[in-house]
Amino acid sequence: MLTPPLKLICAITAALALAVGLSANAYAAKGMEMAVQDDAVLWQGLYSNPQVDLVLAEGLHATRVKANVLWYYVVGGKTARKKKAPKRIKYNWSGYDALIANANAHGMKVQLALTGPAPAYATSNHRIGPMRPSAKKFKSFARAAAKHFKGRVDRYSIWNEPNHRGWIAPIKRQAKLYRAIYLAGYSAIKRADRHAKVLFGETSPFGLAHGRNAQPPLKFIREVTCANKRYKRARHCGRIKTDGVAHHPYDFDHKPTYKYPGKDNVTIGVLSRLTRALSKLRKAKLLSTPRGGVPYVYLTEYGYFSSGSRKMSTSKHGKYLVQAFTIAQKNPRVKEMLHFLLVQPSRKYRFFDTSLADRTGKPGRAFKKLAAWAAKAAAAGRIAVKPRY
Image (cartoon, rainbow, N blue to C red):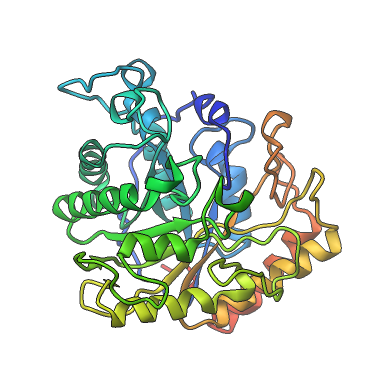
């Protein structure tokens, strides 16, 4: 989600009961994966029942559920406010344990984005937030997460929208900070669970306010990988390994085929900018899969506004969603496409409302259109489907 205010993140207090889940390796998907994310409901239960979301997710033929694991939240409020890291940290994973169990019961796998805000003891200004998060301390958090979820979670992302100052600050240090965080997290996860996949990026789609709030994703990726504008090695840096690159190709105001300006911006209509960049980075031996290949792309947030000043009309909303998911499904480099939010948020959280149904689970017109598209795509074998037992 783009630019969540810190007060919203700090308002998270709910956690669900611990439950036992099915193995995350219970099945393998073929075709593009359909995925959903709705953290406030699926692991917090703030304004709707998680089962409402999961039933809707089934209607979209989703085989994946994604959630952000908020670093400061899982260490607990009292610990997160400490300026010095305690010797022992007791993590609260209960909401995520319940999410995994619920998703598995519906035949869906779970992937987790390990992200900030960082606790005060891991930031340069000793406040909970995005200011120069410590890679060393993040490594301990990532190791703890991978150990706890081993065998139940098979895919992780490192951070959320690291090219936006709401998640990593200051902007001029973002690339250096993220490189250290990613390498630390990748190493920690692989050591704890060698079978788990680790994704790079989770980048936001475009620069905002002339670079004061966010920098364009391709510029950011070049800086992280030490590449120049021609995607050649700019300075001595080791190759970054990844199991895939995650990106949020939002374009809230245009149809999916719109060619968004700015060669370093990447929305759904100009996805080839990202895939071409990844090929060049692999050729330069700056970013590749562990086996030296070009990383696949995971589109881990997408949607249009359902309310507010940027609300999309109901007819366009459904039409544009179908077009966007079709673009993603037809791209051979795309492994996953995720719709962000399912049920309408409460008024307090409605500043970012990309929902497709009301809180009782009654679907809107856009949901019905996307569900119909997914049903046809599943029947034709174009998207992944859950196994039949």
